[in-house]
Image 1 (cartoon, rainbow, N blue to C red):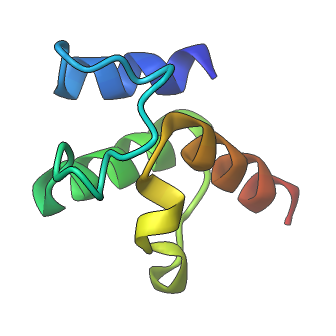
Image 2: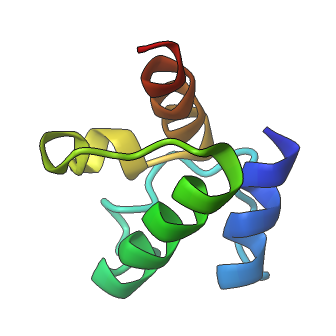
Length: 75
């Protein structure tokens, strides 16, 4: 999870990713951010996020993203 928080903080140092759960709803992350996050996750965690998983629920918080990474890593 620490690596994920580092990826997110590099994009937006002013956001508290440990508590924020409205990253998409409040438009903190935009489509470019999502593409960057997906690429970083692929590189760092060796996990490919399929198109059907690119939904707001999976990107609204660091915790949701971490759950997605763990779920895809188990497949």
